[in-house]
Structures are given as structure tokens and as C-alpha cells.
Length: 109
Ligand code: HEC
Image (cartoon, rainbow, N blue to C red; front, top):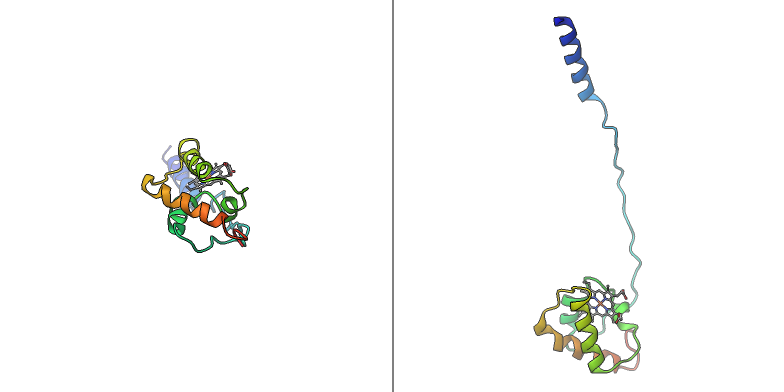
């Protein structure tokens, strides 16, 4: 009886020395380059702080030109529908920026 106990203790110890069954390899992902950067303009920082967590610049810039009211409603939709943590105080600056950028000859280039 005593001998069996010793043997199983040895078996347990031996088990601890085994290599782990699951081996994780280093893995990486490469995100696509976004060739478009947010152009300079008033409110750019507000957009970076509140919008770029979810969007690449091109998502925001490659939109049909719309009115200021439409931008207000898009930003509102980001907050209510997609739960974007947009700072209320930053909304006018964000809307100004989007309107400004869309009024440039080649937005986003
Ligand atoms: C919490 C994540 C999140 C944040 C932050 C966010 N959005 Fe969005 N946005 C989405 C999702 C989800 C969609 C819909 C799916 C898509 O088009 O990628 C979307 C879509 C859009 C679109 C496409 C047109 C449309 O009406 O759907 C625009 C433009 C846009 N967002 C602008 C903004 C701007 C400007 C901000 C900053 C105020 C912002 N987003 C912040 C999640 C977010």
C-alpha cells in the first residue's frame, strides 16, 4: 500500500515536468495601411479624440458631401446607436471640422 502511494506521488511529480500540452506561438496581425490622414483644420484634435478609436480617417472622409445638420445627426447617431463615447462639448468642433474638410477642393487627399 505504501509503495503504491510513493509510485503515484512520483507519477505526479513526473507529470509536472511534462511540456505543456498547448503551445502558443507568437502571432501578429497587420492592419491595412490607411493612406489618408486627417487634413489640418480647426477641430481636428476633437475628431482624433472622439472618432478615430473606431474609424480610420478614410471612413469619415470618404463620405458624400452633406450639410452641417446631417453631420450633427451623424455624430448623434454615433453616440446613441453605436454608443460612441463622444464628449458633448466637442460635438460643435467635430461638426465644424467635418464641414470644413468637406468644403476643401479635395477632401482627405
Ligand atoms: C464606438 C465606435 C464609434 C465611434 C467612436 C464613432 N463611430 Fe462612426 N460609426 C460606427 C459604426 C459601428 C458605424 C457603422 C458601420 C460602419 O460604417 O463602419 C459608423 C459609421 C460612421 C460613418 C458612415 C456613415 C454613417 O452614417 O453610418 C461616419 C461618417 C461616421 N461613422 C463618423 C463618425 C464621427 C465623425 C465620429 C466622431 C464623432 C464617429 N463616427 C465615432 C462606430 C463609431
